[in-house]
Image (cartoon, rainbow, N blue to C red; front, side, top):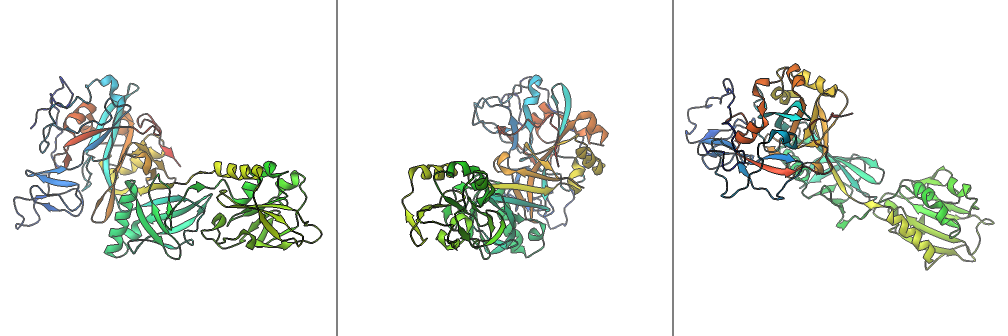
Length: 537
């Protein structure tokens, strides 16, 4: 075993105490033909038999000199890092490689600063086969209160991604299939304000279809969860490149603006600015197209009606539904000529010389017209004062982004890694006694039964997600609570590691344990995980 005093920055620390592993050993070989040079991986139901120097089917576990190790480092969060690129630091355990010469100490063991360190589930290993405690059950202090954080990598079959695409472009009809590499991996759900929503993955695609469908759904989920780009197509709709935190690319064109509102909202927001510089304004939108002089905002400003007659279904004064079909043109419609949605002009009301502005909800499309003697709109150069208002519409649009949320059911056997009586964990979460995080990022806990959590992947450390070939997603999850609450819910208190021991040795288990740790600075958008209540629904 490697001595862990010179290289890990923990001077004067006692040799870690290894918990009693009785009752948590490896299963015997399934048959006598298994080579003695191989080790059987117990980290998931696949049970790979791994030769020395090789990894299992998931690439997450390896046989290193006869020892099954978790390949990736455990990610530890700190409030601040002295070095923006800290080196990997080995644990003092079998299978670990010596630290690089000259590696700097990463923590001096000062327990007064213990609440500056948080062990995440990223790289921590799993609880599988779920009869044993979680790999890390870390004791620490936060504001002088004894805390426990139960850390594991959950294997999720019941999980999906909810993806928000900021765009007005038509992506596909509601319930249309979303395909990745030709396989159906999800569907279009609905539209929200300025966005289209997709549901990707889910248990029915992972396990309910063909093997290829499951593999493709899993691959897509892992890519998007790890903030990588993936291209999808939607039946009867668009092709789409999705990447969390980046602008969507629809049919090869990168989206720029998320609209300021629907056509009616845009009319209301900018009505006072339009009054006096235009006699009529039409904001084209596939949802609600707004007409200023008929709209309540125009009436409040004493603007006389222009006599314009619109296509579509009139909803309320100045608000029209279904003026055109959804598409990639003006305001998310399929039109390229905005005049095509004007049915005509009311004689005796409309007058020659009437000034008409037509714009989309983002201001990306805008044209200026003046009615001639035959009441026909003739396009004219846009006056500077009108152009400034159109530019202001664009200025008020937020950048288009793809938002990827991981949604997973954390009930079932995963809870056995926390407590011998799993329902007590669920009840403690519902009572706001336990903070649930994923890679240190705050997880929203859905109302109702079970532990269904949702988290923004952009707030999680990079490469937080892995896979197992069953197929299922592997995602980090942590449960933080007061020590006395942990004891009350039947937690595995005998496996609580003081933080300094967890930093020295790593996981309590010997089989499939990580051998290195990596420090990462917590995302500025995230609250410190300890001492926080859960984000309950």
